Length: 498
Image (cartoon, rainbow, N blue to C red; front, side):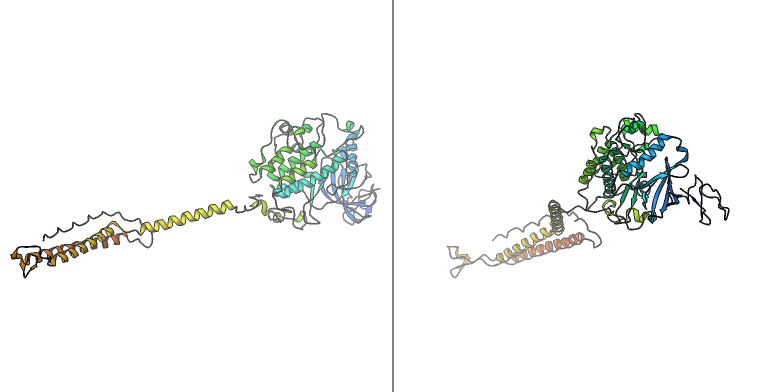
């Protein structure tokens, strides 16, 4: 039995009273159920959202002293008994499952107006859809962690014969109230397929299309029979959205999107987010195969492939959020500054190569060889710039020739004394042979030769000084050595006849 509470004074009245007798305020109606108490214990406090099947409220369960989420079916849909049975089947499908990543159902019933409702676990957080709108593309490790939890929840559902058929970011809630890690909850089994009895054939006929067009599998889009691999395809679209910030197929109408799911190939994720590795791209594209036989055959196989593709990541990286409650978390808390997101910003928006490459032995050897080549080139250039010029070598040769000429002139100036070999008597004196007396002419010749050699040496030294001055480099910039014209070596003086 439900009653109504006055939003002004807080007093409660019977369901058939429309106005508060105390202050005259109108009491909540069927369209506005705030303040209504369901089953004598659950009080509706706030509207959380509205969907195609009903409205979701945050409510307080007085008997258990906890907050719960209550989903009430829309009044205009109660005339369709098939929809009413499907709404009740959602509660039955979720109640069969017990998994940390699947929402827990507490209570199922009807309001006094005959509207079916479901009371379930209340999760403080945001939807994955809201997170992607603000921060996609997500880091690879974080997106794979979320997808792995979803795959685990689907594995639990598939083992109990439940196919979700409407998996999308809007049906995935994220919370970080315990460890700071993304904790997900899969909700809304309203169009789930339950593989038991004849009820499935009555509620889901062949050719009927259920779900959100952007996340439907090709077999759903064509109205064919679906199984657990249909949820694998939808999870692949969710992962594609998280890692690229885009949907694989978009169109101006739902029919156009459905035809793309059936006929067209999705754009490779790396064309949108080049930071993704080929292994990650291969995981996504395998899950989006048109033929169910070529996809991962189970959600667990999908999870194993994601784990293998992220073996190169640091353990536990990019998996945690700050402890702040998700609804109040700003961009700096949910985005690239979350712990571990350095793996992709560098890639991961934000990931960034993921890690700085290690310096291998071949790389070190190459660097050492390059340094040796540069050092050898520098030494060779220095030696080239400091080499002796042609003038310097010519001056050295002239100095040597001058010294040799002086020595020979001195030797020629000495009188030649030879033993007596029968020379004429007019050239000998006292039995000793003597050189002919050259007299003043010989002394003048020697003086002229010495003077000419000294003048040539002095001239060459002046040329050497001018060349050295031209070759001297400026201090502010290096200069190339100036080309010089070699000076011919001086002609040796003629020997003096004896």
